[in-house]
Length: 257
Ligand code: VGL
Ligand code: ZN
Image 1 (cartoon, helix red, strand yellow):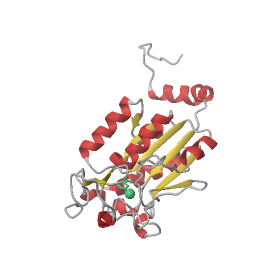
Image 2 (tube, helix red, strand yellow; image 1 turned 135 degrees about the vertical axis):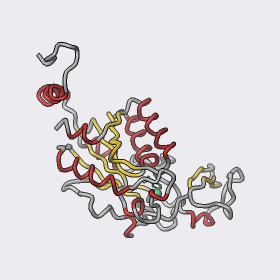
Image 3 (tube, helix red, strand yellow; image 1 turned 60 degrees about the vertical axis):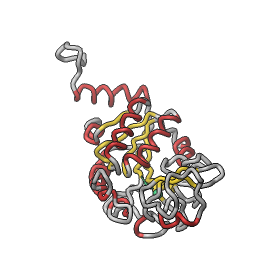
């Protein structure tokens, strides 16, 4: 019935029809849309990713994200915010506040932003140092002014513990504490998570890795994400695919509606 040309392939409209009229009815996916860290500091503030190796413009995620939010009936929508206290361990200008481990490749007085050091702990903790960014209740931590924030969305704050960084929206980097994300997804019966935002190879990558490890069907929206380092973005994509994640463009999602 659906293979019009009887060539073993069905076309896009046929697939959309199959999906909307019976696959979805049987499978009953519950979708969650997670917009990661679309905050001023990553776009035009202190951790402006356009000044990093990949030279990508973070503001370009706003349009595809808004279009998805206006078009796709996601069952729930989450916005994460990097939300650091002023004494956060990841800030380069705080590096002298804590002792480094003797194994640190760079001593405190030589360390610069984007270097990786090892804090003494115990246990010793590797940490990439960043410019001071997304400090709680500052302009840099606000969501981009043009980003659509839908009613009933849930905001998830991460990186609030001064002693540990948090790239994933699920857990901090030491898995000491989780944010409310897992609980909120479970409460809504979510099965599929659509993830995008900033930065592709840092917080977006860590979040989708955790989503896949938990067992969600996780979909990364490539054109609605921008990153720091081209080689790291490539590695992030490979890791997603080898863990059975899916990478799509936003127009592929829009075409399904
Ligand atoms: C992020 C660096 C430091 C991110 C957060 O949101 O990707 N990157 N903190
Ligand atoms: Zn941060």
